[in-house]
Image 1 (spheres, rainbow, N blue to C red):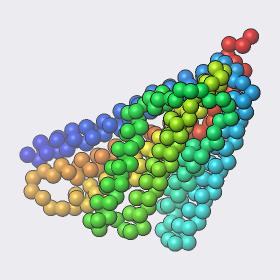
Image 2 (image 1 turned 60 degrees about the vertical axis):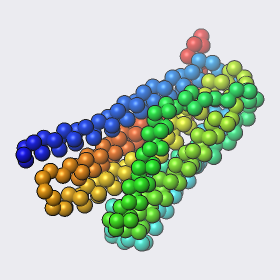
Image 3 (image 1 turned 90 degrees about the vertical axis):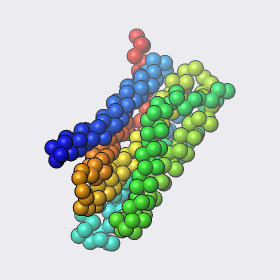
Image 4 (image 1 turned 135 degrees about the horizontal axis):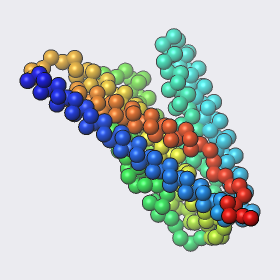
Length: 280
């Protein structure tokens, strides 16, 4: 019976890890989609207004992300003041939270492009895969629910629980604001600026979705590991697969979050325009 139980636990662990691989594959396809959107900017030279928009958007994103880095440093200082030596384990998470906050704020507050807007409004599916978008939302809901349940059960300190609730919720709100702005703004009317407009929308949609996915998935994984370890300390009869599923889910969420973070780190570069590839 013990051998059968271990076999079932291994199979369950592998099965729960599968979603992280599927999510990584989905983001790899999103990278190809961003590459196509960026390449379209090189095919047609933008108008003077389009070129000015590209430069303006790049400056705005760089400045706000620098503010996010400053915020991360401030959070590190606050943790040192409040926790002293114990804060050494929070330096990297604090910096990451500050940087991701800068990314989300930059995308949610991007200035409206100064060009003649067209009459048609874009569809959500033109900017990002709905599967990635709804996975991000599901991850946030799962993280908030898990944090609340662990807090209610006394498994989390008040400070940790409040942080686990506030940070993903605030990031989600900023992401939804940025995504809403993308669909309410009409497309560019000038044909030369349409590729620039579409590339900017694709950039923003993928950046905010990836940033919130990281903010939700990695804390969710940590919380599931805590829940699995707590349940694993119980004495039960037979084989209890719930702790195994929770631990596997925790590793799966952390792995998926790190995979999305890898793509996000390579996507910070703004949309650029060089000489058209078909010129000459």
